[in-house]
Length: 403
Image (cartoon, rainbow, N blue to C red):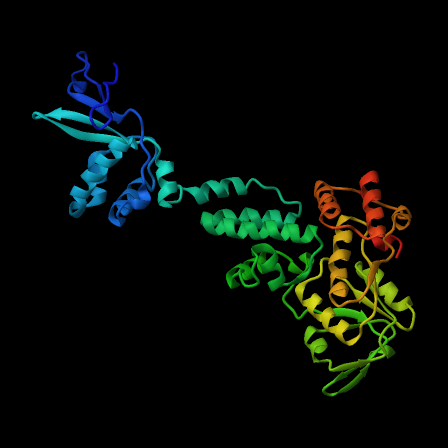
């Protein structure tokens, strides 16, 4: 059986008559030989809406003509006929007809590329969320708590499961990058906006995970600092220089400081908490020591900026000898640069790294981060030397081993 030459509308006909099968007598298939583009953007709204309803869940399988007419309803019967004629002439559908009582009647039709029509009309693919969820749920998390939380998402509708799974993925990256902060910090990290995690999602995360282990706090954040300084508040003066090690200050307390006396000779920033406490107890009497909690959260940056307004001094920044440590030092140093103050790395040279009793292999993410750091901007000489050493040895470490 062959298709006929195209008629005046470009439509070809394939006869399905079979003398050995009476059921196929008087049947034919219509299809345009060379499909033409459909300018659906120029179609009237009613035609676009009807077509969108038809193709919402359409596949490449045939659908009965009367099924489409029922979907259109009696008030759109003429519109449906006109629309099917347009689609046939454009090559978007193939129609099968039967010959009865002297006329050809549409029996069933098939959309030749329903996905393309859905894209033009802005109709999502059927079961798109389910398909995406089927792919997402194959992911294995490195943290057991994240894996357990992900498994429980199967009980949710796919769209909600995808949204919450995305938070778990972001939480894994947050932990890998040694970040810490408030819900707003994590929301901005995960979704690019400080208020995009709903109360229901917060409740779910809080019940499914130990968020303190992931560096997300429901409580007021605290800036740990050793200051050889007296600060003025509305209720009087605090002689913080009398404290033998360090204090914890809330952002509100820091914002309330109106003046400070006894500016430090230098700021020493230390990333590792244990190392920070050691340095705070052993530093010189005129030095300030500040805990740097991984990648600087927004509240921490604001608080430190305020302290630098009151107590300007150069900075010495010590972070873990690894790619993240280099990135963290650069981010913290930007606060001093913005304040017109100098800063430099401290205890981050290759000799410190070589003195470590234990090291770990670089991961693929570490390699990618090193690549990015080395091309984004010139590194300070000490950090550039450390980056080369890490790449050559393919190892990284933690400052707690020597500081």
